[in-house]
Image (tube, rainbow, N blue to C red; front, side):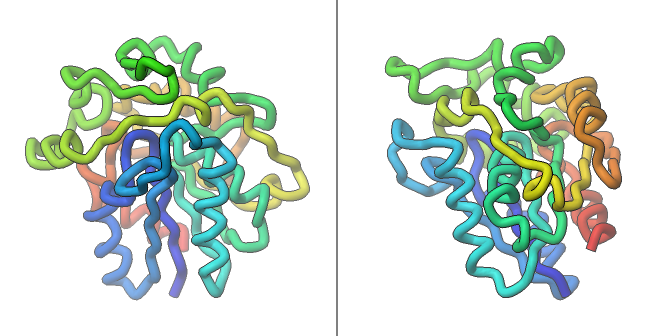
Amino acid sequence: MSTIVLVHGAWHGAWCWYKVTPLLESRGHTVHTLDLPALGVDRTPVQSVTLQSYANRVCETLSACSEPVYLVGHSMGGLAITQAAEAMPQKIKMLVYLTAFLLPSGKTLLDIAQVDSEAKVLPNLVMAPDQSSAMVKADVLEDVFYADCSPSDLALARSLLVPQASVPFATPIQTTPGRWGTVPRVYIECTEDHAISIASQRSMHTLLPCSRVITMSTSHSPFLSAPQALADHLLSLL
């Protein structure tokens, strides 16, 4: 049996995996979810959040695992798993980027998002007065993140999303071939994604080739709209 660690994306928390976790656990696997700093129910002040603090939180979970894990990152969570793999490559059996930011060393999330003309996140951000965090406009949340999700899951997400810290978006990834580059990686692309366009996803996994690319015909949130299909894809990698 395997150990799987699921890392959520911006604005979300460990809650977003609530459908997928039991599907994986029912097959005998150990699943860990976590809240990144200032997200989910974590109460770290948003002004103190950095990309390094995200990586540190993931590394805390890795350190508590007795065996190398399958580390899954969704969306912005791709940054966190990349930096965690640079820090602790020996603790990771495989990196799985779920419609996630897969960035080369020296690049930031904003570098990619700002040239993704089809994506709908940046044009719909509302910044906090001190610029330390942002929210996505409420009237576009469904289209951006949950276009194929049920009304109940949309309502759940609306009730649980929290402000996203700005600093990690503008912080360059720092990786090396001898550490992050040694960990096998897979990309799960979502063709109907309005948060990270399919063109942008494919540009990223073409620049940094993965051992396997899996395609899902879903929005940005397959953990809500297609949990069984997503779980089956993850199980196929174990």
